[in-house]
Image (tube, rainbow, N blue to C red):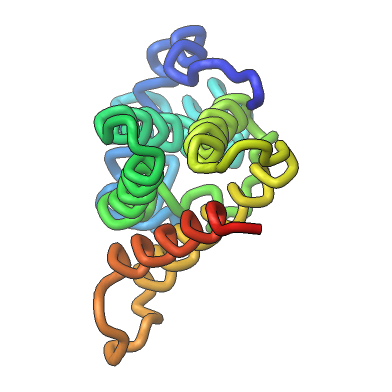
Length: 206
């Protein structure tokens, strides 16, 4: 695991006006994609000067990286709650994590896509970096708990990448309507089948 800080706590160090701009932007992204987003309109909606995003964050890109960080951090918190509520079964917790991610893609796609669309590197704002680490740590711990004894950390990391590649890939294909209609079942069923197969493979006799 990697040490991180809580993004909401970090946000407390920013002037309330800066956080109001972030909250306003998150609300606007629930209605439309970032391509339709204007910082002038964000400022107007927040009731502040048009220059406020630049004053508080330095640039439009850094501001949007901060917005992406807060959005991702809240998604990580929601996923942590879902995993905790899933009980003690490792595979049930892994499925809960996948379901939480799929819900985020479906219900908040423009916030989910923000850093991907803009090709924002995680290091461009500490909130985004912290949120990404938080989500990765949750994935790591959940996948690690699914492993048989004596699996190396290197293997755990590789299996994290494979498991998340499956969840991300199927979720994105479904969101973009790229899974043929002739394929029986929906994205959640496909993800569940894939995770079940991965779990069985991890525990197969060597």
